[in-house]
Amino acid sequence: MFVFVYNTILYIANKIYEETGKNKIITPASLKSENQFLKEVDSLALSNAQLNVKRSFTNFFQKRAKFPRFKSKKKSVKSYTTNCVNNSIRIEENKYLVLPKLKRIKLKYHREIPKDYKIKSVTLTNSNGNYYVSIFD
Image: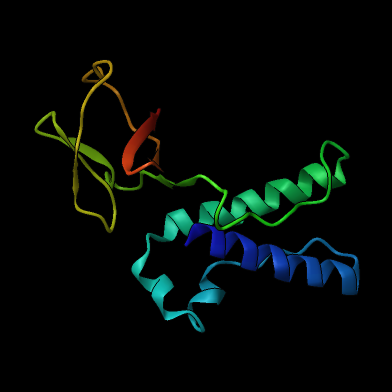
């Protein structure tokens, strides 16, 4: 799904760049009117796809990278990143992770998280049927 959003935003940005020569990135909200299924997804995760496209264009214009390419549906890593706003991401009972628009996810710690730890963003990755969570402060 996030590959779809990234590729759609990149396609429209490429079209605008070819026609006008300007770097204009659309918002994911403009895609929701024609793609109703995007309303069921966390909006912050969609905005991160937009920021990734914007960052890739910025790197291209500053000559740090090649022109942005589309992501493959089959070969890309199935992951998404969401941000914590108003305690939308939290750890409950010290064994569940609560994410926006998802159920509680049972945690298996590799290292303990301190009590005063403030979660800024979370990346959820699916690899061979196993889910991995990276928590960033």
